[in-house]
Amino acid sequence: MAHFVAATAGRNMTKAAYAAVTIGIAAMLLLTVAPAYEVVPRWINAALWACWAYFLFEWGVRLRHAMRLQRLRAYAVSGSGLVDAAGAIAMPLAIICGVEPKTAWLLSVLWVLKVVPGIPGLRQLRRVLVQESGPLSSVLVIFLMVLFLASVAVHFLERDVQPATFGSVPATMWWAVVTLTTVGYGDVVPVTPLGRIVAAMVMISGLGVFGLWTGILATGFAAQTRRDNFLKTWDSVSKVPFFAALGPAAIADVTHMLRTMDLPPRTMIIRKGQTGDCMYFIAAGEVEVDLPGKKVQLSEGAFFGEMALLGNNLRSADIVTTRLSKLLVLDLVDFRLLMARHPDLAKTIDVEAKRRALENK
Image (cartoon, rainbow, N blue to C red):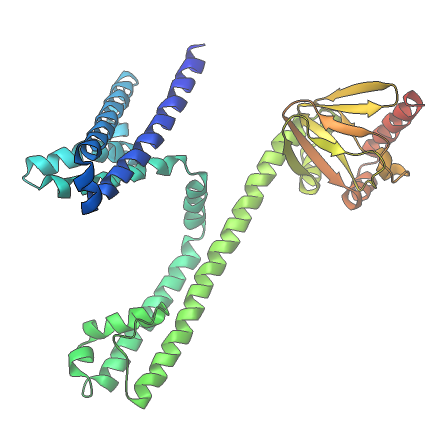
């Protein structure tokens, strides 16, 4: 019970923090808009101080909780601890040091960092960056090599024609960065024929470098997503009694074939008379089968839709979810492959299908 109350309180505090971040950032933005600030200065200042007071209170609560768990040092040096501390003390510390209040309140932009832990995609991005750090670093080295080579070459070719712009290699590096990133501001451009040839090669190299980075990240994200989906599906498959007798290798084989569906209550899964091309296993939840003269409930561990895969292609009943359900879906092609690899499963499904056919007559 205490754990449930703590979890609920934690969720409520997170929601309040998100609301405070939204209000605080909006107030900070209005602070920089002179006409808006002149109309309602008190409301804007009140919103900023209220949000700051909340973040100070939140920081104090987390410090106290960390002290109780004897993890104060670990929390203080963690990413979330540093963000909480910055959100609570950065602005008042700036005011104490003599910074003008309007400027000091710009530090409230640090509050936006509080939403970072709640973004699952960022955790996945961190894992991808760690796993693909080698290829990404190699491409970074190529980028820096092209940057320095291009800067030296264009400095040599353009320094006599445009000494103010290309008079030194560091000054030329601004042009090289803009050209490699294909931004093309146009404020600095080579004018000699050889300088323009080098510029063209640098632009093409920039496209290649960023294409490599994009490909590496996309491949990493795809691989990480497959791993996450595999683990989630494995967990669901292992909980279905129908697959309980399978060994780890067989469960892995099944997991690669199945896809998951999370459905809310009263969702139509199968409609009578439609052509069937898949069957379903209930990993969690419950469905209702609308048969002639009666309705049957199937719960966790049951399966349905197999009749359409065993001969009769048409669905014989309407099936809807009765509550939030997680289903594992097996398509026709994978169904046949799975039955060929695991005859015991084929026999079990066939026996259950015949039993249901007799009951439905």
